[in-house]
Each structure stands twice: as structure tokens, then as C-alpha cells.
Length: 182
Image (cartoon, rainbow, N blue to C red):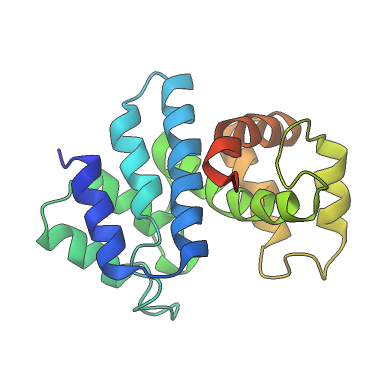
């Protein structure tokens, strides 16, 4: 298995955007937390989170992302289950989500982005003390974080077999340090 250091080097090789790097760290943290919850390997799940969008700056179109990244990961020796999870996090790839890791990655991806946006508009700019009602209120505001699919926010925990509110609180707790701006 590849190390986090190798995956981080790959992320940095392909990604220069601080916000995209921050997103990768948030999804990594959420995936590691879910791996522990489900009795899976947190290192492997963390790599899926860290690398799920590593190719996005170079290959941003739906035709290319994450397919181009999957090819690069294969060339560099990353395992098939990790590549499949990354492929399945994008509905347009046509790869159905079957494993728990695949479902967790999909469930965490959009929510991490949305929660990061929520943190920016909170007085303390953190997720400390976040209430699900605040997240639901922001979801109703179509202008807020407009690129985040509300359908995906709801579908993710459903596919994972978790109530939405529980998923939000779990992910918020898992990522709060990863997105903190100290």
C-alpha cells in the first residue's frame, strides 16, 4: 500500500489551489473517521479521501475527472479498490458505488465542501457547536455554496445507511480541525 507521504506528494504535484488542498484534507479526515467507525483501514480510506480530486485542476471536465486521475493512480501502483472508490464518487463516471468505502467517499465529498463554506460564515469561522438546523437552513439558500448539489448532500448518507443529521454531525466533528484557519 502507498503511504500518506507518497499520496501527499502526488496531491501537491497536481494541485496548487489552497482551497482544493484544504478540501482534500477535510475529506481525508472524514474518511479516516468513517473507516474507524466501520472497522476498516483508516490509512487506505484516508488515501481515497486525500486523492479523490487530485486530478481536478488539470482535468476539470466531466469527461476527464476522475477518469484521468484513475489512470495516473494505476500507473503509480495504487490499488484497484482505491481507484474504484475515486471513480465512483462522481456519478458521471458510470461506476456504481458498491463498497462501504465508495459510499462513504461520495457521502463525505460534497458535505465536506458545504461544511467548509458554512464555517466561513460563522462568527468564529469554525464548526465548533454547529447545529444541523443551521446546515439545513443554508441548504435551502440556493445562492449559498451554489456549486454543491443538495441532492448529493441528502443522497450520500442515505446510500451509506445513515440519517442525514447523524452524518452531518459526524463529519463536522471529523473535519473541524482539518479546516480550521488558525
